[in-house]
Length: 105
Image (cartoon, rainbow, N blue to C red; front, top):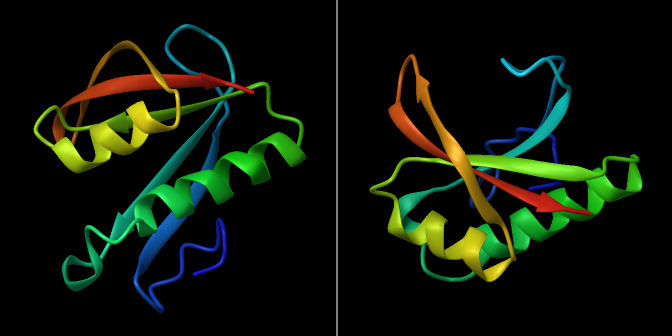
């Protein structure tokens, strides 16, 4: 998996999205990752998130956001480990309630 390519090869998928405008009227970058079940609990999500954060920093972003279901303990742990802070909540059309986190770069 290469940072940001959305690839399904290897152990999962990742992405760096640039959301043009949020509900608050500002632009933001958001990371996301999925680790296929048989590869979970091996640190891959943390490494993917670190690579996406580094890529965002390299492209000039000042902060990065991530949104996670409140029941997704492993992803919440990854974001906590990397220094993200909880900044709000949102409703996703597909996934329902999500907690929103931000990391200043």
